[in-house]
Length: 618
Image 1 (cartoon, helix red, strand yellow):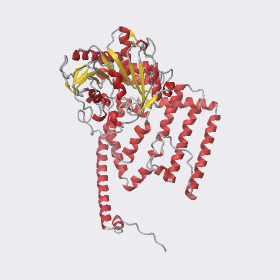
Image 2: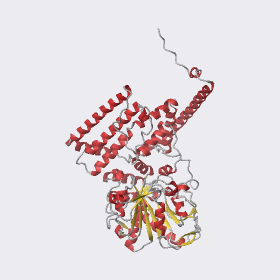
Image 3: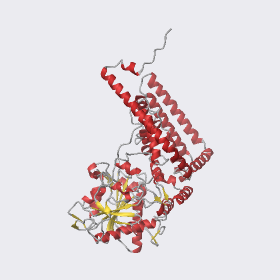
Image 4: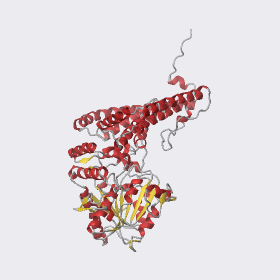
């Protein structure tokens, strides 16, 4: 009788190896065991701390979610009712799916049993980086799973596309929710179907999953019972050291902002100061990351006296602060303070994203009141027209805004983590599932990356301001209407703006789609230079010349449509920064002796980057 061979112990297995290999295996095994023991001990401690946190969170949670399940259900009920009236397209999509699956199965058998190459039935779209590892192509089983998943994804999204008689907003929501479903269903997101994770699990005897569970609990604990996905090492950056390190002084502050004046690095500067108005969604230091890619530091080196608004991270005490308060205590207060500091009555303005929307409204208010204080204005990825804002509009309708208003009334603000979640869902594979795999399945810590550190340093929104902004800009698109918005008691009209304008948009922007920003650039009456950068909302803006990346498109004038503009535009290599520097210099005035922060009419309050930027959301 043949008896099964006894299982070899670790010691027996090492006898088959040479002395050096034995030592390596033993050392590796000991290291794994030690790390696993540490992970288990850490997990036990965190679970004990998390139980009361989770209990408290469940007691105080009002049930608000960025993706409201009732809205999702109502959306797909509407989709199903419309689809059931005309089933022909759904039948065709089912036939297409099953035909492609049969073909995929045949080609997989041909590859495995006949050892013959087989053309893929479907391939990932070029921007999709989830399946770039060789395993997804070289391993027949993984390749089959990949293609089956891609066919299923195409089928699900095509079903939504095929439904007729849906209103555009419901159609957009259905596509957005379906995309979230198919992204979550990817085989890359599971241990047994992701070859890299499976290999790591076998090599480490499951140690990666223990470390991943530890990371998961750590993220729950850091979020006080809410999952706060870590995208960058939170200990890897320090303000004033390797982040927001451009030297300067806070020379003015009020409840909503601190005004920073940066220290010059040239002996002479342009006479007219430069005021930067960043978004108050996230923080200003996206413009002052590491020295080599700091836009602020670069502007100072070009000879500008740079002032910048650092917005407060508001709490419930500022719940009543309105969009008009941001106008008065932001740009208006800053321009008045700059006059005290330098003696100059007007400035060159830069507005970024929502900071640019506020800047555009400010210019229109100045035009209506005859109080012109800007010699030129630059807009970075700014919406003045909100007719098509892309996937973010999936969250914008009357019922969802009412849920949001009810939630904010209870707290006095909109939480930063809800805002971050909404924006991360716009790029769910890059900003959610990538880190889910890295942190929880592979058990690794994310790298130190300044841009992703900034992305997770979220800010709150005051109730009054945020409600007004979402309803009047995103939902009703009133800013583009003459008299649609009243600011400072005056109906404003963007068409009255006569200031020379520079619009920088980016071709892959998922927050401020460039075709929509182009429509906004067509509204003012002043001379407009429109420039289109490659890449997206952040990387396309923070593109220093030394990087020699991306490129940009220019055109001598504005065409009737963005498509016509792009067809006749000229592509330029490298960064758009020098193009802007040449443009703005014509409005900057003569050169004078460099201004030292605090030497004028405003005395220093504290060193840059100030205390407001250090306020973190919990």
